Every structure is written in C-alpha cells, then in structure tokens.
Length: 220
Ligand code: AMP
Image (cartoon, rainbow, N blue to C red):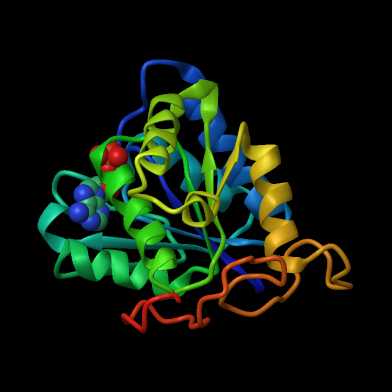
C-alpha cells in the first residue's frame, strides 16, 4: 500500500513528439518503482493513458476520476485500481485534489493548464500546502513560464507564489523533487515515506495547512 499518492495532470492527446509519451511512461514507471500511487483523470487516451499504464505495469495503485458526461469522449481506462465516475468537472478536480499528496503536470492542453493553475491558485490561497511540480518536457512550458515571470514583473503574481511551483526538466527530476518535498532529506522512511498530507517540511508557504480542497482562509 503506497504511503503517498501523486496526482498527475497531463494531455488527453499524445502530442507531436514521441518524447511526450516517453516522459509520461517514464513518470508512471518511476512513481510505481518508488512506492507512490497515482491519481489521474481516469481516461485511456493520450499521455493520461501512458502514465496510468506504466504505473499499473509497475504495480502501483491507480485511482482514476472521470466525469460521467465525458466518459464517451475520454473512454474510461478498463483496468484501474479505483475508477470514480463523478458528476462534473468541478467534482473531478475536488476529488483528485483530496486524494493526492502532491501534484505533477506534464505537457497538455487547456484541461491540463486549467487543472494545474487551479491547484496553484489553491496553494496561493492557503487551501493546501501540497507540492506542485511542473515537468517542462522539451521546454514545452517555456512560454508559460516566461509569461508568469512577466506577471511577476507587472505585480499581478507575488514572487513567493511564483516560486511555489517547482519546475523540473524530466521525470527523474520530478521524482527527486517529490521525494525531497514529501519525505524531507532526513526522513528515515526514505522514498515514498510518510510526511502526511499538507506538504513536506521544506514547504516554504506560511499558509495554514489543510489537506482538504475546501476553501479556507487566504494566506497572510
Ligand atoms: P487536455 O490537457 O486539454 O488534453 O485535457 C487533459 C484533461 O483535463 C482531460 O481529461 C480533460 O477532460 C480535463 N479537463 C479539461 N477541462 C477541465 C476542467 N475544467 N476541470 C477538470 N478537468 C478538465
């Protein structure tokens, strides 16, 4: 039984370069190998399928959360450990956030951006203190990161909130970051060890920690 679950947001498409699918497969394999469980959107298409298949192949429990209204479009994965069919996109995001101890985004489209930016917004508001890691495969997110720097310069995003997102180049670095933030460097439990929900000891946010996606008080 995994001690921590990692929620992966990623594209329902394969992307133009095979490197995207490879990165998703690598991330799923590494999560399983390090003893993590996976939470994701529950679909059997695109990068979403790749990360889930690799995690399942490695023996990890995989929790899918799929809104019934899009079940026909994003066909539900047939072999998940748990499949939750929910009523709305909002319920999907809430359940994914509740079940996860950390969040990782791989390349994707509107859905991926929507999900990851909402999770970052919740972190900014102090609704959770769970690690948020962006995997910048082949520089896919370079434009987004430049825009966020622009938003900081224009004083619409505070530097400390910009810094709450960990940006890494590949799946190996994502796992190293997750283990550092969830377990801490001196955790005798090691990789996949328990740090409890609400972020790890190195989480710099001064916000109140809760593991619930229910809105709480804003950060000071
Ligand atoms: P995409 O990155 O556009 O390929 O979408 C990735 C996943 O995000 C798919 O499972 C979409 O159904 C999902 N998605 C898109 N919009 C939303 C939303 N507003 N809330 C939750 N999930 C979404």
